[in-house]
Amino acid sequence: MKYKGELNGRVLARLAAAAFAGALCSAVLAAPRTFPAVNDTMYLKECGTCHMVFPPQLLPARSWRGVMDSLDAHFGDSAQLDAPTERAISDYLAKNAADGANNAESIAIMASIDGGATPDRISKVPYIEGLHAAVLDPRWNGTPRPKTLAECPVRHYRAGLGDFFERRFKVSDEAFRK
Image (cartoon, rainbow, N blue to C red; front, side, top):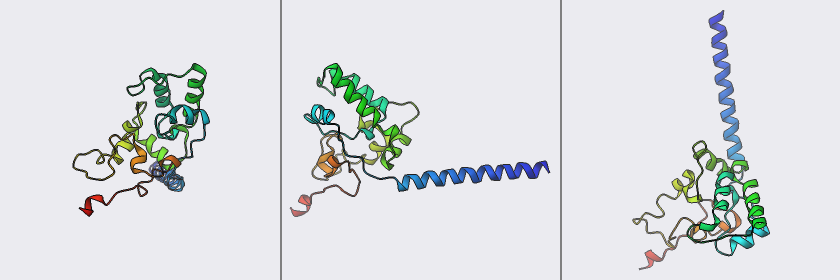
């Protein structure tokens, strides 16, 4: 009897694990693929003046805190803000970060980051790096050609709307016309 009980316990544990995995897959498949539109006016004004305002759901909160804590050396430039503005933007980014988001891309982003790793930029998120591995390869001749992975709108024409879906990007046929 003990053997039969152990077997039933193992079978039940496997069934429960399979049910959980199925529910997780269903949740990811049902989740939206796009990011919500950025609607924080302070973030739009202060950050959007110099570069695209990236959806907060592209990084975990700890990464956004790191980015905001180093504005004196923000990717080669000083982007220092007064303390209340910096705190407000940092809070907005952390509150809406990938680790609290429910869209498919944010779930994939978080699943790709090892444990407590803290990517210091969006292009260092393993999921994003993997999707874009060929883009900066010199053998890739796509046009228009971004100089860095931070130039999302060069290829993703709906990036400003939070839509980076891989099937919605622009490719010129210029090379074929020669």
